[in-house]
Length: 105
Image 1 (spheres, helix red, strand yellow):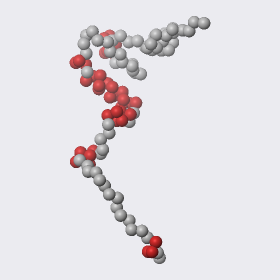
Image 2 (cartoon, helix red, strand yellow):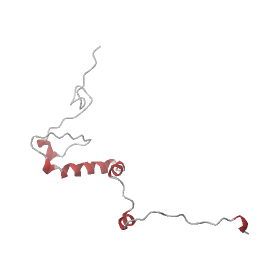
Image 3 (cartoon, helix red, strand yellow):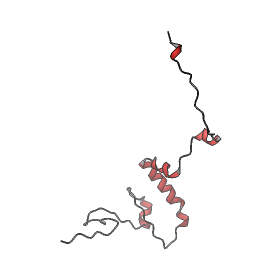
Image 4 (cartoon, one colour):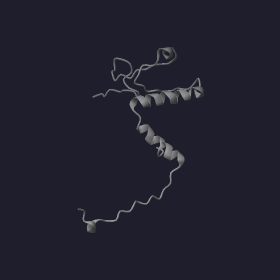
């Protein structure tokens, strides 16, 4: 048996906000800066490729574009790009992006 003398009246919480139809359908919008933090590494690669491809008509002939990738470029691009591998090995490729000056003692 339930002792009704110790039961409290429950009142629903008040909601002082309204939602748009879009928010009801798709959820609360996530700011762009926060959204990219949720990307997997595969999603990030696709995002960067789509972004770079969207800018290709804005490239000038005399511009330099530096792309840091962790994958081999497609074979059809190899004849049209200058590829420099950063190996952190002073005897192969390029040591790193910024010049490496060994310490002199």
